[in-house]
Length: 208
Image (cartoon, rainbow, N blue to C red):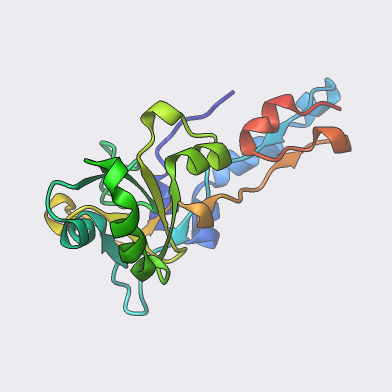
């Protein structure tokens, strides 16, 4: 079973408060004794983690990457696409911790980007398409020339005008980067060493 809901609560509330607000889900899992008695293996995990993305004053820490690249490379040389962009922007403002960069002239990128990217070290890491796809199981035909991840306390935007943050009524919490990769995985019985999952999607392969 894959339960797909908006992660609105986790975007709006820190872990302790969020857990109380999803208590009914937790209690339902706790009443799964019958599943255990039937001999089934019950595995509970999540699709991603979540972190606060604000400074000490509660203001969102945002890198507007499209503006940055336009300044470094010139307008029209790069396009930033944010995977988190979706219809449900009231809780994250389409701001996440990953950005795909598509270059107009990938063959001419190396020297200019190598010089420019020295300035990225403080707040991002970046990988070429092939390495990013290999490391994170991404589809090669739908991944940018560069994949950029912000640090754990920062999100990536395109331009300020493309992100309406007026609806954010709580300090920004978001996800999508390497800092939110680790998630808990619980099982109702011991799992054999050769079946222990490396990724959350390995839960379907767990056996007794």
